[in-house]
Image 1 (tube, helix red, strand yellow):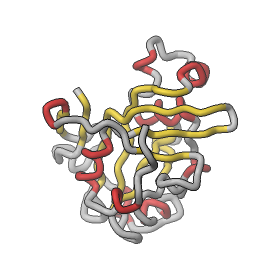
Image 2 (tube, rainbow, N blue to C red; image 1 turned 45 degrees about the horizontal axis):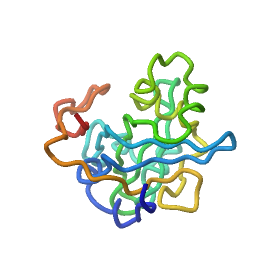
Image 3 (cartoon, rainbow, N blue to C red; image 1 turned 60 degrees about the horizontal axis):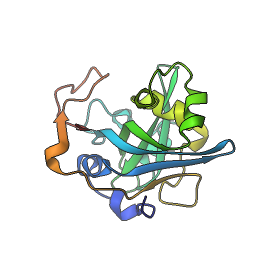
Image 4 (spheres, helix red, strand yellow; image 1 turned 45 degrees about the vertical axis):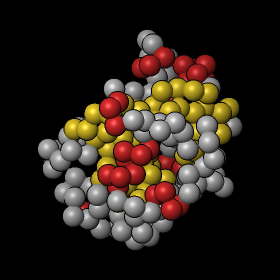
Length: 187
């Protein structure tokens, strides 16, 4: 795992950040222990012109941190059930982000197993956005955290993933702009 990513890394269009986050590491230092995982799936939400983005409705209490400075965590509750973590991109006030959809567990695997007891295999511990947050104990309290350092939730440089190992396709679990190729997955 490399150093924390800088705000400059995130101060770009969401689809470029989403692609380059593949291979990066998300790390959480919780009171229970440290967990981390290599990012293997992301989705880009481009901003207020993207009909599937939460920012299309403007800045609200729920989306406040989505409009924050680049490298901020935007954490929201999906369908009232699952927390989802995003990395804010572009300039402060714009409203673009990258959803972290799946990770391969690295540190704290036993702790992840405790938090996700129904997962049959380790690869199932964090193979969805809600599962990532459950396995890593990421909740609304992390909304607005500086992913670039200074918080317990950080994103770090990792191993670059060659284009030959990346599949680009439509986002999933949404009803608008479903055909936009903004989902990035490591084969």
